[in-house]
Length: 246
Length: 299
Image (cartoon, rainbow over all chains, first blue to last red):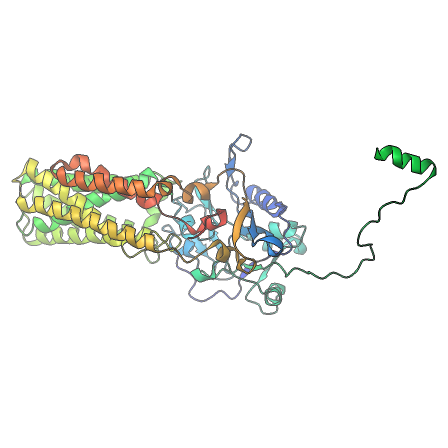
């Protein structure tokens, strides 16, 4: 049923993404693709993957933006995947019942056996979180690695989304954003975590941590402020210096 | 937004059919159009044919057309689903009305009720079609109060033009239908002008700064896109050609569409192509908010 859950889910599983530490290495993008192309229920297909113009369905993308100018400006790597919104417009527009938001944990999913591939949900998503799998003929999106986080065949420490598990900069955090005691909620409070396009009112579950303020004053390291010019020397080294300076 | 030909055919052809069905469902029971067999066969054949062609076309771009029947299930939340449900329901009174007209050559009593119900169904279906687009808050050129009136007016216009043609070819040509056709042309293109004025005056609420949350640092611009080639999102929502030449295309659509439709309204066969141009622009000019992540300045 594509109506949203009547009551807000008890748990709101999602990601907290740190724009301060993300280095834009694309590891999360690749591991997301790897896990989701090999896992349930069908490959995440590519078109002409080895040709001049490859394209395909990916569930996580890293954009790089410049914000501001000069010394105050920043280069910000910006990972973007489904934000599992509370007011998920992609769910309510779905005519077939394939898109749904889970009442128990708020994860937004597509039932690929029901999706007719009309693409209306991708039009309704402001963030570009859904991509059509052209070969499969169905819409694909981030599942928050639902087949990892509840997977009892995996060791407990591996029960987190593939993108989180692989991030070498620890810029991605996974947890329950409805639990005031959870690490992600504390992180959001401490760092001023924010919503994307808050003016649109989709109430995304995923939060972004803004880049930290730049540290302008650094302590002394003991290094000289500038290198001194070498004094003229006699002997072999002096001759070498003169010979090489010519 | 990418102007898919199947969607343009869907909205214009079904719009034409429903516009015609709406007029027939009112004009025949009220006696404005005689309930004669061959006229009924031509008019209802055209209306139901255009509707069916349009609805069929809407399945052409689906990844899984064989699952299209599932689209009738989510009418509680989805305008696309509502459109499908009302479209299917409307076939029932339209079919009864057609049988009365063509087989029994009557449009009185219960047959008249069927005609009026078919007209009501046609009206609601076109509203639902327009709402599929008008309900998308991500595209401000569509999420606009003039979209529904424009869809209704274009359906009325194409329906009225074809009604005139059918009446001249298969029945007693009627001055009222010719005048109605001309008036509907003025109404449709007038509303389209109002719509263009409304979307041009609206600069949108979202920016790359609000999309990334980086406003504190200053202006945000795309430095490095996330992929080297176009992806589904850019192909579907980053359509540029029409926007680049929007002014020229609008003038062409307006001048050619308006003048030609008025002059050749008797030859509606030819002019029904112009609403397709309008519908193409409706898609091509629309900007999706996701393009904020790909360097767009506003949405």
